[in-house]
Length: 246
Image (tube, rainbow, N blue to C red):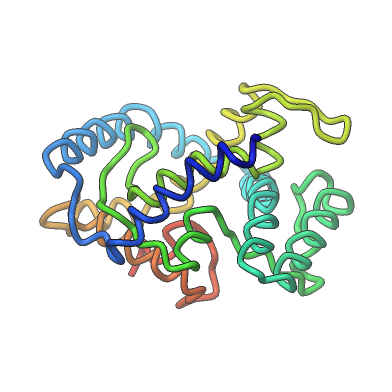
């Protein structure tokens, strides 16, 4: 019965999104620009100052934080690799998580990389794109930032197949492990701060040199998502917005 309900929800969305291959249109540019302005204000008042403080921490702490959040993100990649039929990548991701969580002490270390284990980030939005589902129109969410109809649907779906989200945000016990929404928000917050801190100069340069910051961010986001769906990388770096400094 639960599978039937999920199918009833997914099938119409799949058909709707399949109509548009690219997010060339905006759902509502006026709305998105307003949200983008709010997000820029939030970044200036809250996120950027915290990220500056983070950048002053010792390098081992900064690197460890990045390793930890990336290791947690691997849990979402594993089921998406399976859904895409990429079983070798799923094996690499699973082994990477196991090695980093144990030998790497909860993921603060990254011995899996030294062992040659790959851990490419995947989510439901990418999985849908891999199956030919179009982006749908583009818009901007408060705090969460740029997205498309497909990727926003994927964001919700992620919470149902990501073991970390199930244990924390949905507070389900899994293999004797339990968590809370506070754990979820804390890790996602740390991810955002680490990302913002790592790209401090890139964001400053983009803001300084862009005639239209909104249009620049939109272009970067859409190009980055397209590359991730096609598994194309210019530098071998799998971070979100990997081409931010291009």
